[in-house]
Amino acid sequence: MDAVPAPPRPLVAIRYCPKCRWLTRAAWLAQELLITFPDEIDVLLSPGSSGIFDVTLDGVLLFSRSTAERFPEPKELKQSIRDRIAPTRPLGHSDR
Image 1 (cartoon, rainbow, N blue to C red):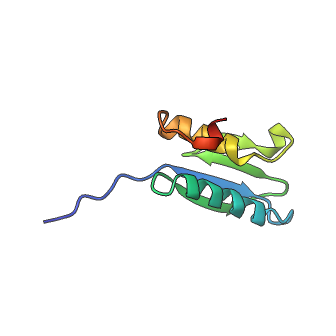
Image 2: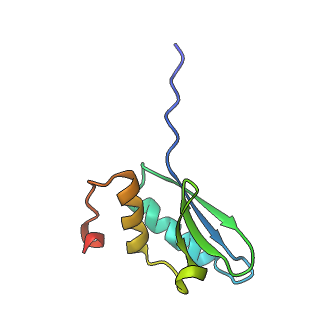
């Protein structure tokens, strides 16, 4: 009997600038997201071009440092991801 493969999980991609040394920030955000959504998402860290720090969910831009002129807060990313993948799921203190 062949096992039916599980459907792919939503992919959060964090594209960061390695020259700016933003890997640590990207990894910290990835950790925060994986703690909140351990079984619901996959996270990809991807080095990019100079100055970039973008977060996408299945290819849809959730946050761009160049547009916002700041880095994303974990709370806003968690809310944005939750609103797209599990709108009824409570986030505890991240909902305040």
